[in-house]
Length: 322
Image (cartoon, rainbow, N blue to C red):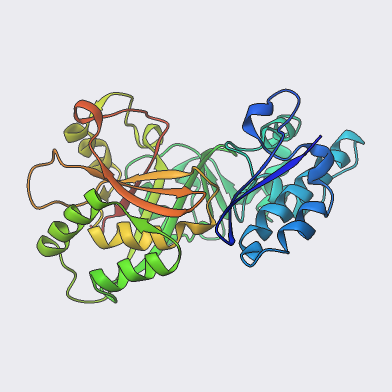
């Protein structure tokens, strides 16, 4: 019975799929019997673009090793816990959805005991409320309140969660004003990404009305809508109140392109929404960046009836200089 399928497009790999688990074969991840071997790695190495799949192969092998260790009740070391909780990078697999073993293995752990290990700190260096944020704090696990991002950036807190490990908040730094629109689009194309035809129309307009005339370092905040206090079916025009309260603002269009260039290390099907500053009405499309099997795509879409559909979706805003 075949355990791996490699679909080609010309001389390049289009996708690699497995049989999935016995509980959920439709997700088509590699099953545990093949994921822990070097069979996939050896086969993929035969193709010109095989290196692009190396992280997936390595991640699946390591996840299988951790699975076996936990079945034998063998303690995990710090590097294995960092991997399992995806501290440094997301775990990538070959299926249509996340490997179900990630959630299953995490459910068998005690996050409170694991946090000081994965954050490489003492329990006292994990803040649970804004008043506990100070120099020397390595992680914050708590609610987002007005002024929180200023406190976190000033104290250079490295790990931010509203709930560990599922609800992670990411702050990234970008230097904008260094490249023009064409250079950014060309860089995305060279990286294997693409911009939808509809997005190109709005990108032209937004670059025209909101150009950056000088270099500037900005910080973005990526979170789920619900972590920012935005509920399901919130009117798009009303979401700004919650964002303003937290000291956030809409991104310039350049950030959407810059974000796309950094999105190639995300798992397949990962997606974020990026509302940007527009030249006209607030009722304008939102940009979305998605990691697809073919590469990273930047598109524009209209929220249905101008509502934000799902509070669990991820969104990117700019940290205000105010």
